[in-house]
Length: 336
Ligand code: AHG
Ligand code: MN
Ligand code: MN
Image (tube, rainbow, N blue to C red; front, side, top):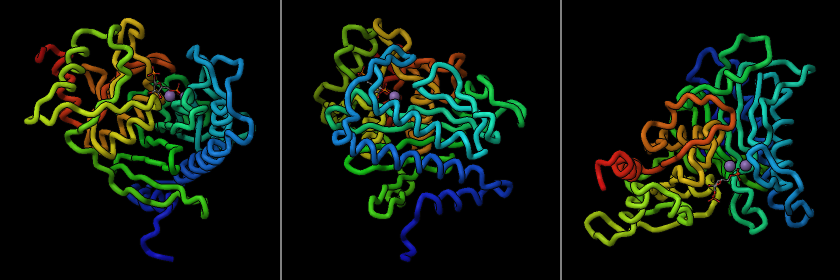
């Protein structure tokens, strides 16, 4: 085998050697996530053929219409992670409360939060969607089920965060606090192969990603910032390009590679923003910071926020360092 082929499993094993006390449980957990990702990837690709597309009657806990593939992705993640003895509790966008580990299975030390399918309103149009995950060590005593408090830890306590993007190829991108690494699924081997080692986001980007139809609902500071990015100014390389897919995973993945800012501000329509702290903002913030970028809620670092609700929403400004600093200057009133 070529020495250049590094599978996800090998990469995780080598990363874990940094921790002499590692038991292999984290590697097991990541392998289970990767397996779930392969199943979701397969079904996402086959969705049109298998009659799995279309809206179900169900409305999820956020009051949004759930697509069938959301349910499949959610069940796949839960079933992949509930029996391995590495996890003590889970949180999913698709479940109101915490998801306990069934009594017949052993409890582990990890806490996993996930958005099983991000961007699901795009599925019917064959647009990229993703799975996002966030992993913590439990803070409750071992040997008992995990608790809500285990799931409400601030993002800087994450031991791992990652996403899988189901796009023109399927990629898994993750960090354990030692840089950001991307793996592309080789469909013939069924293996994630290291394709993007040590991803670094450019310090300044050429892209802004926002749902501009919310313009009239925004504060003046956001309106002014968006006006700023569209002005012509050669010296500062403006205007920026507008790119908005409506799948956060895909929008941030592109900006991570090309440089840029993604924003979902609070507004009159969504006073706390739209995106969820635990399984959307925190994992993406950990990844983007590890790649050299920034993620804030307008004032403070996303990773410093201590949530108090499982499905808490948060305004999000994330991406290239200089671009995030610029919007922060508008929000703080330093620029107007
Ligand atoms: P989800 O599909 O998990 O509910 O998330 C959708 C999110 C996110 O992916 C995306 O960036 C955002 O909603 C789009 O919101 P708008 O349609 O309001 O722009
Ligand atoms: Mn989502
Ligand atoms: Mn979702």
